[in-house]
Image: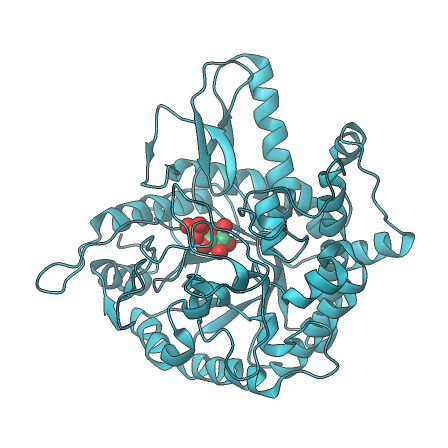
Length: 484
Ligand code: BG6
């Protein structure tokens, strides 16, 4: 059994728009996430430009953490968490995004959370922007395509660094920044607008016939510049700040030994793990970007000042989410599959969850080894977990052995990667307390160690109940990963 290093940051993760609820309380503004309806594995979420009566918008209620934060932090403390990854809702701090002054009530909400974390010895790991932005920025500026949004984000980030100096030391600028390469992520992050009534997977941000990729990659570039500026400010405000990138990472395998399949899988892995990683860790676009831009007729507005900012604002660590692996092929032997907004092919050697995501612990080791091999800086796995339907037994217990098995496999794989020489510094499982799914908006797609009594029919009183996995994870943390 591999040894996890002393001080390893064990914990779990949540995101404001999926968890907090209280979407219009205490001065909070409307975010992009607040305009997305609920869906399920067969029915996509939709964007509605005006909020429709009798329609379910999962972010409006989430798991009601806003009113359960004390109880929830107490549960994390009981499990022995060393870190808790949470995001700040930009719209609680700057309701419209371009406001002159921050909303003090929003700042106060997170301050009391961080103070309680400090009492409990839990290091907060704060995502500054997790799949949401003030909707006003999308409507008034067209979102992240517009360079002015860089300044609004940097002002927001600076406000947080100053306000929470000494309380927060670990930061991530943008959640899964590489998801801007997909229409889903581009809308979620407030990068580009969606048409009224459109499903979440619809093309974003361009008039018919326009170059969608051009719009997506310009928005992504603007986020890179904003992130790099924020990194520099964060370091200037507090030299103890550790600021990371966050990428939806993983590995695609070739379906056959045909060289073209390996090449396609390599290209897919490059675009997923290294495109954004190179910009944020090395401070410049990868060599393969030029060809990608040329072939897709993308002409970015990149200034010399941008290049300098990127070079100076490199991150301290690379963090990523990992749920499953994929398969690429140029043959027609593959069977289509989809995982976490990525189109791929079925892997005959793996089992799948109820949402069609492959379960592949060894894929996590491969991902860790490859990313560390390229960058040689500390890594953190900040999302991993199993979305599943949980059953509450007659005696109230929830026996989520399938979740324990999934996490056991992935923690063992991290141990192996550490033995391979990877400098892995932390692990935060996704949705440590049940929350709404980002992809489908479902409450019934559960990831937590703690059950939240709320379902897709909008029934339930939000009461919390530890699952079997709660006691298992507590043991894992207490043994520093030795007792799985
Ligand atoms: C990640 C996101 O992509 O996947 C989370 O950062 C999301 O916000 C998680 O919740 C799991 O996806 P889903 O669709 O099951 O919620």
